[in-house]
Length: 295
Image 1 (spheres, rainbow, N blue to C red):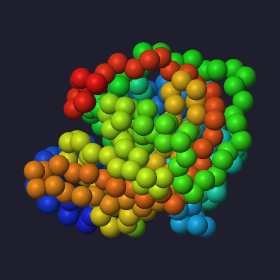
Image 2 (cartoon, rainbow, N blue to C red; image 1 turned 90 degrees about the vertical axis):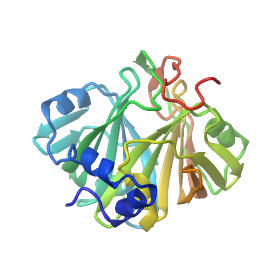
Image 3 (tube, rainbow, N blue to C red; image 1 turned 90 degrees about the horizontal axis):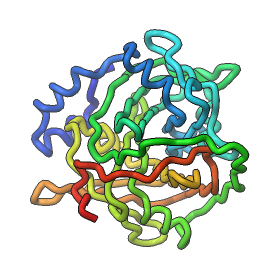
Image 4 (cartoon, rainbow, N blue to C red; image 1 turned 30 degrees about the vertical axis):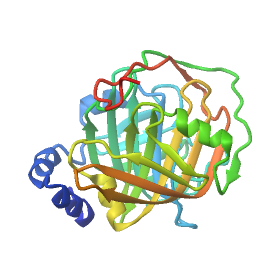
């Protein structure tokens, strides 16, 4: 599989960063290197993204566990001995052999993140991903959280399926300094991180969100996917209570004359789960890269 597909190339050319993207793209490969394997084993949270094989909707889902539940079990394989919360909209995809899946492990303690994309294979204890692309991203826009604890006895609330955002969901989005974006293309799936000061994602209406696309690594994998296929899934989470909000819908990118980019997302479905994750993180520090870190 080539590093970039036509959608990413189109956006790179539009922004004028093809040469830089080619340089950064040399770091992408199918191998899980020892430093990546060691990183994975320390993580209590993995985010997966894929298209549901029945509905075609794209979702991003959280998978939590005791560190070590995600491991490299081969030079090009990641194994996960857990699954998404009960009632998760991605459950069918994550139990279907051959599903194209994107994953990201983000560690707020070190402001590091690692992405692994490939094809899924169910296992007796969870699933494995046969890696096609493995790469790390820079720490930009990640807010450091020094510690986490696993909250024993935290019982997830009943999943609430919605078609629009109410006041509670809009409040969660407005308070977020992080969300995860799942996108797809003809050859696979991808999950990326988006971060900023609370309020960087705006709720325009009960069915529409918008956010600025800050400068990144010039690969334009997510925006490239959206250039060809507007389907997308968003995951917001409350780092203290473990509450999650998953959105599915479509997204389009607007390019301003001054080089700024804005993504507009239309909600077609949502799942809100109080206390979905048994994790509680400490309060965040500002990201030094955050354009709005004076807030």
